[in-house]
Image (cartoon, rainbow, N blue to C red; front, side, top):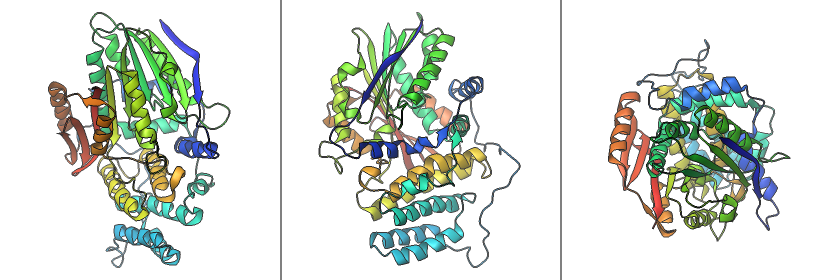
Length: 463
């Protein structure tokens, strides 16, 4: 039985914010360049390949193949400019910006532009996208991303193109794949005897995490439970604010039908997750509740913007829900400082690691890599560098800060499952480049690159 409740839609908005529509449009700009109709057969095949074979699908320490015969086009370097230190130029430029020395910043930006390229090596690519952010900041005075997003050079890509690119992003670095595996296995443990499993997913987006869980549930001893998913997401701007999350529900309903898992789907499109009420979630008695968030709490505002932190507000909401498990993965980032120079420096170190790992595992001429670097990572860089105040929506914190927040909100950590961790560690070593890191700290599963922790995952229960 598959029951997708199309009418179960809750729309919620923030009160007393004159700029709420502009703010929400900026929040959704990272996905707003994506449009078009997706061929469902093609989409299903892509999903199956990327999302259902996570424990068997591997790329054993090899690069992905190129997508075409084209060669990467790095900027030519002669003996004179071989020694150009792009990182140092970027840091000098950020210091000039911080000091309001726009003349010097523009001169440094010209030098960076001469030696950077979206088709070059890792340092050239990261410099290119940071230069975009610097230019937008110079033009827009803290709101410059709007100029960038509306420029003719910003190509509108189809959803199918985006999903193909996302597949490369999902398969090559292990971070999302292992975060999904970790969370799904922990949810399966608490749902071992459940008649109804209710997943409340903060930031469901395309729902990529759940096809594998549906497959697990279909193979559960004694048969699958009824699966209820409440998908929470920011509304899209315009007249169809819930379109994307409703499409996610239809896709998941098809998977449940295919695997004979009873299914119900509810949508909450809210600008302000902390204002969601427990009643909106339609919790039923005797159901096992799993609250889940995959890296999306980084988009919630914090104390530097609002005295009553929305981050803490969402955690208090989850505590009221009283879930059987709360699975959390975070981007481990230190680039949330209100001080531009500090934020720029930390962001440069963080994103340099990401572009470097892409260079190690995906060919430079792979068009899907270029799309991911431009449409996802490049837009995050743009937001961190060019925006201030409400316009800055990329606000990650370290896993240690989330540890403090969650503990204060009334949660206690579950210990890592030693058997699961041993299995994941073995997969990690067998499948991935030796410079990827897999570790544990204080009941967090950590993933990173060359010693820099980029992803952290853990599980909580009410204390």
